[in-house]
Figure 1 (cartoon, rainbow, N blue to C red):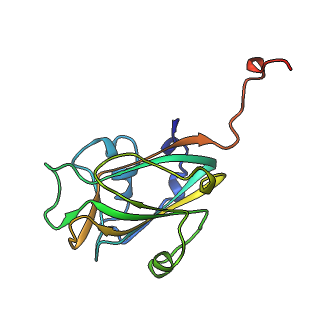
Figure 2 (cartoon, one colour; figure 1 turned 30 degrees about the vertical axis):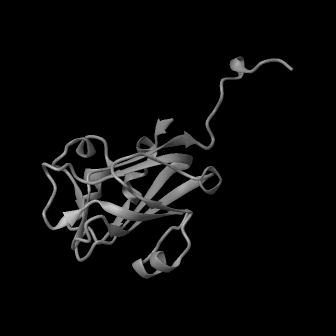
Length: 165
């Protein structure tokens, strides 16, 4: 499986309720997401919306959403617990995200990779992550890393590898 972060349209990423602008890079982008001290933190409450648009259609197969490392975690924040993942929803408000049915609802327990429902994640151009609640019930949510694994929808195959009928 590919790291689909390499196929994200960086200019189209949007994060609502983040403590600082562009802090989504800390959790999503290679480099910053590999440093334990770089995190994405919610601002007013535990909710976050992260909208990720890809450069082409993809088939996400697994996600990993990890909290901050214990040595760098904030006292007023904790790791996400319930995350709703929406497919091809160009824009969502917090009110819409709370009411709308997601492609998949993930209850996180630790930093394990979560397999996605294959039928719900075909031809995905936009993935929207709505962090509904966090583990500790703290005022803020802190994310240390987001990995999206999968494949390209229009992946080309080498015809020389095809077997004759």
